[in-house]
Length: 303
Image (tube, rainbow, N blue to C red; front, top):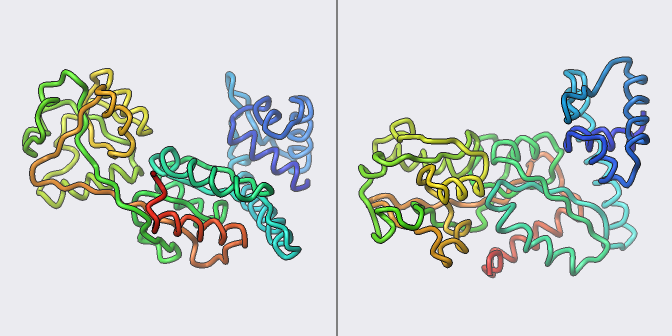
């Protein structure tokens, strides 16, 4: 067993495919299969099951995957620390983002950061807020940007920016031409909610509770796993929803969707730079954190 085999193993699990893992690592599929067989021979058990068209880890594979990700992350951290010590600005950094930061904030930041540092590679992991926080705690991510606070004392979070949330309806909806509706009216329409663990859902739930309501009282038509899926659901008249004004900026400009306020409900979502208090950031992570904080101060995260 070596780190390269573990790296290939993590790619197979993450991408659920031998061929995609091979493409990611510039290897042929037979070579990937050979690495997986060597790992299984080493541990004396099956690590990957091929179900239909997907490669799925066995229970033993799931256990190994947790350790393999940490070992690969530590390898990247070691390489970055050594290149920094030698005066080279290069290395690989894996960061995480919940849906809105990952889609609407981080690509711009990553582009600006890597363009100024040709020897740097940034990998972006997109998951819901709860999963990103778990990965930061596990050490598989050095940092993440998420839309909700964690109660875990091992997590450090710094507010970067605040986003206004709005009620979004499709063009042609009876409410499309009004500026606001009452909170009671919200419970009359089919509603699309985000999945459990979403920072957007947490923020919305908190505001409803503060006003004496709960999410279960909504006429929930669908639960969707991403902001983009919710946007498509609204466009296709599945229901209405609460979304980030940043996420629907283009649709609002084109007139495909309309945004309005809910009387007495000022919904704002804050996004937090999230790190592990028990881990010292690698030099590359420290440089990226400094860059993100400077961008937030200058309001350059969306402009």
